[in-house]
Length: 512
Image (tube, rainbow, N blue to C red):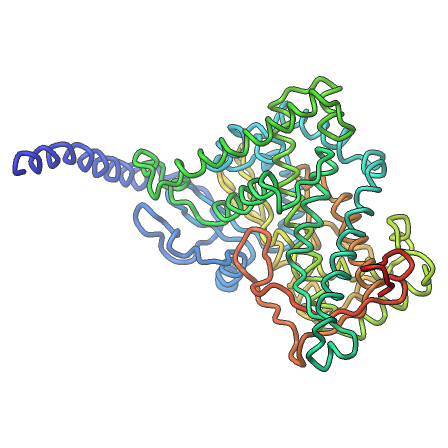
């Protein structure tokens, strides 16, 4: 036993010595390197040795960055381990970043999760700015997300929205058989919207991309949904290995091992989908890309980018919109009146109607403003030195844009924290003041798809159901942790089908 202990101690000593030496060398490199006269943005206090300002990063980050900006100003810098970061939270600085400096800031951070989930930084969302990224962006814009391609798949969105409405009716019918509470006696039933909205957006993306409804009750659907959820959970946490590279030697926290296993499982599922299309030649986006002789790697990378970028974001936005409408019944009433006036009761709303529903559009814009699905835009990384706001942004600096703070800036928006869709009537908002989909050349290319699905789903829910809060208290608008800023508490609401539902659905042989 004594010999075994001594042997283990001998094995541990070189590792401990190596880590200690690396830390000491890192301190020497950081603090003894030649000092150049750069004018860097101000920092919130003194950076600690090695970790810098990492200890300040508390969730949710957009609120932490907003709090720090109150003392430092609209642009400030952070030392995050071995990396420099700059946080921007004013529209004029955002405009400067993504007009004059758009190319210099067009790279993405090199992080571990994108190495594995993002096929070694080779996808549209994570690839560095250059020919590969331009090629992927062109494929997505022309072959997947163009107006013509989206219109060709509009029937899928209509079918998925109808499927959601049917689910609501079925839940309503089951609860009405119990009919216990006062509201239920008036024909209202309580529903939790998040699972149905998640299913709507997930199945819409899968049917459009793969001509396959991966219902979450199926094993394949559950696996893919779980992978997406786990990736989001891992991505929203601050991974120390990304900022302190020496921790990668020991895989601190087992992060790399976990994300590598997740990436392998994801790739296996995606490859199965591609192989199925190669055999069966389905009419879908995968099938279309195979006809264009795109490589499997390109197709899987686009699958990853679109699924991860277009599933939770739309579901979260619809849930926030419904929460806001329930807290403002007069706005919900006005939206319903617009639908009744423009469409009537004889048919369901369709995608082509959305351009004729300006008030509904303003409701969605106001939801994007208050609760953007990306409160911090996807981070950028500078590829060369540049200047923003008169400060030096050095090559390799991470740049965060706090869209949430800009969207709620009282100097830009009257009564900034209130829900007022009317503020957008007859107003053309500048891109750097309202940016739920990012801005510049790396803005989200899926904006058209998101606007169509969110608009159609929200319009159908307002047209086909009456909605009330579960109790007299307002819906809690607390924010949960996560990259897409979900509600802290899933939305529960009371709903009652409108007469229009009788025109296209029969439940258990009788009209509702």
